[in-house]
Length: 177
Image (cartoon, rainbow, N blue to C red; front, side):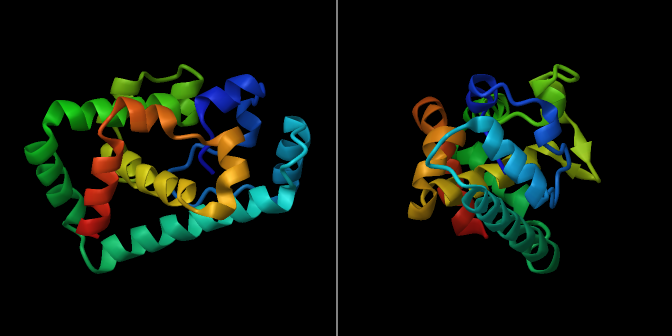
C-alpha cells in the first residue's frame, strides 16, 4: 500500500510496516492489524485498510501482466510521449515529487537519494516505470469513493496535484494502456 511520507512521519511509522519490493508486496493481516492499532485512528479498520491494499495489489498485478503480454513497449513509448508533450523536466519533476511524497524504504531511510533511485532498476525494470505505475495506482485508489476515509489519513495526493504534472501523466498513462 502506498502511504505518504507525511503519514509515516505523523504516525511515526517505522519500516517494519513496509516492504521495499517493487511488485506484489502484500502485508499480511496481522501486520495490517498492527499498523491500524499503531495509528489509533477510530475511523480506520484493519479490514478496510487490508482490502485497500489488496485492491492496490490487484491493480498492480493487472498492469504488470497487461504490459508483459499485450504491450511490452508501452512504458518506453509512454515516456517518449510524456517527454515530448509535457517536457522532460515536467516528467522528471513529477517522478521526483512522487518519490519524495511516497518514498520506497530505501529513499525514506536515507539509503539512497531520490535521484539515484529514479536512475536505478529493480528486477530489470527501470524505477521510472515503477514510479509511473505507482502514480497510476495511487490515482485509481484516490478516485475510489470507498477509499475516502483512508485517503485523508494515509495517502493524500494533493501535493502531487498541486505541484506536478501528476494528473496529466496518469490520464495519458490510462489512454496508453
